[in-house]
Length: 249
Image (cartoon, rainbow, N blue to C red; front, side):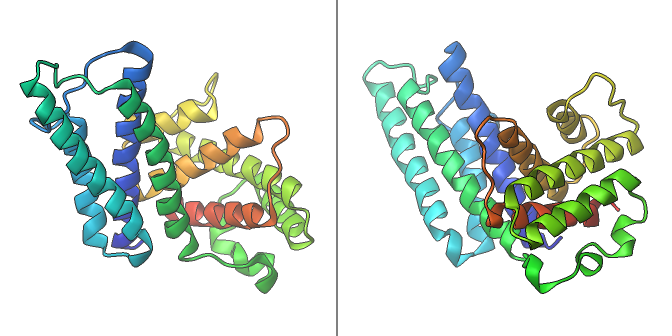
């Protein structure tokens, strides 16, 4: 994992944290320290994310950086002015929290799409044994290997939806086994809880967190009735499972 990728995943992590703070505002009405005086303020985290993203100097992400800077500039001004007219500048307005959540979802998708396509391989250009070489498969359960092979072949023959479902099942098995290897107990724990533990309790490397979040989001998406994965989705999932294996082997 290159330093650039690690930086991008750190930006996504920070933005996800800000998103969580915004949900606190929407659901509980709890005050958030906005102006940026202190390490736990929203605007401080926005500045931190923007600084990391600016350092990456990636042309494809310039719009995200510009949007971030726009939020920093506008909100810093608005809430600073609010202090002079009697409002409590500790309160992040509900409408701002709601809009920021929407923007963060867009930004993170753009960032992750960019990060994940840098080493993207097209299924039709490579065989299963080259795509998932023996060194990546040697410590996997037989059922997981079979799922990976079936998911690969289904994608190869243009059956993306079952391919994605089976590949995600394999990914969940890989993550659970990795969790066990770190000392975790999977009994009575779902994938979301396991990933939270890996991130917060076991402090796995930041470069891995982005892939775990990707798998979790796609797995959650697959649970919704009517979800249909495209050919692009199935190939992207297989590529992310491959990258996941490279990081945890």
